[in-house]
Image (cartoon, rainbow over all chains, first blue to last red; front, side, top):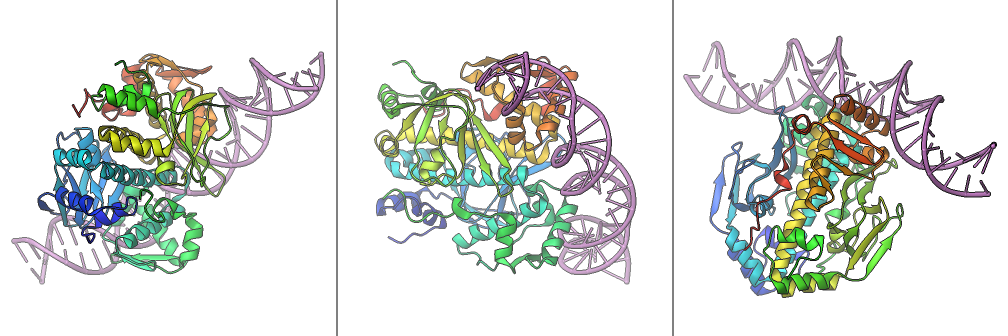
Length: 242
Length: 242
DNA sequence: ACATGATACTGATCTGCCTCAGTCCTGCTT
DNA sequence: AAGCAGGACTGAGGCAGATCAGTATCATGT
């Protein structure tokens, strides 16, 4: 059976999926819903929210704190699972906001737990996918904690490129990116003003340009070196679970 | 059947465990090993490392970057799972270093995957535990990205207290803490010098003292307010999965 | 044709935190 | 008892990045 969805394709990188498992995954996809850009799909504190599998468009997950400032934890792109934690914890611990117009399949909690019961290998696969997401958050943590603004920005652009390439939405030399400098600043933990200056510096150094919604990587080697980028945490060679 | 280990106690917060499941969990605990403080249990890039369930002592997980600086991602205390990602990814993406003398039970990969296959509810439970860890990492990310040094330190001390209380190693008013100011600085993403100044400020404000390995919380309300602390991500009211 | 609102971009000033360069104290080694 | 290492602690000076206060450009709607 062919791998239909980007989500199945992602899981297949870890667990060699049987036909039964693939069809169980397909059944997981519930009603397809559309969301406009800007209005939250899930918000902090919401109980019994749904989970989704993202089919089209970009979203970001973020947390708000007292001062009104927010920290974007990660962006999600097609094939990514949304709101798994919100479901497992019953109450959402973060907001999810569409960056662009978005289409996503709803996943019902009971269906999810039921699928785990009937096809335990899929539970392991989802655990793997969640661990991969955690690895990404850890990488952001390290970036914000110990990389300076320029390295951090470079790293971010490289990571995004690598992720998009894995789902067929970009190449090593460039990709379309709907993020504003404000969104970038909320994700990178710096001011929008500074994001702007850093992007100018990267441009002047001949490393990357990010203009009109398009990222072009001009000097990959230089960028990799600046960012100390190691994509081990995104890339694995073949399914672990046969 | 009684819940023997802190690990089982933690999982029971999410999944109501049957006798069969509890004994499956117990069988997961392999050889008990001891490690001296300071020498890494697992290091970045190591392949086929084991996972462990921490029984005694504290460890930290950290990543090193080019400049030789490191970022501590989290500390683990008894009952926590160590190196799950290293196992699922086949190669470790971070280091694990004992902060004190440590005892831990080794978990073999095959046993783990086997347990998931035979008792799928345990797979869901481990997924939940992993998600809880991710929630903690997310909270650190937000802290480093958007909280200033004082708020961040306050938040850290509160979180540690809450976690220790859950496993019976401390109370709301204080706990023993074997961390040096250097370790703190690596975790909080600031210099040791600054950690020292911030701790002094917190002490002078009458909020907390951290001296001679002991944290005493003197003004809980004030500290909670300063840190904008919300323990929803650590605390859940009863098992989700009956 | 003219407001309105996003987003990109810039210069000037201010500040939180880092770095350097120490001191003091305690416990360990020889 | 001296010597030494690790950790807590302090002051002075510097800098990365924040904040403030704009301008320029483009796409909306009216």
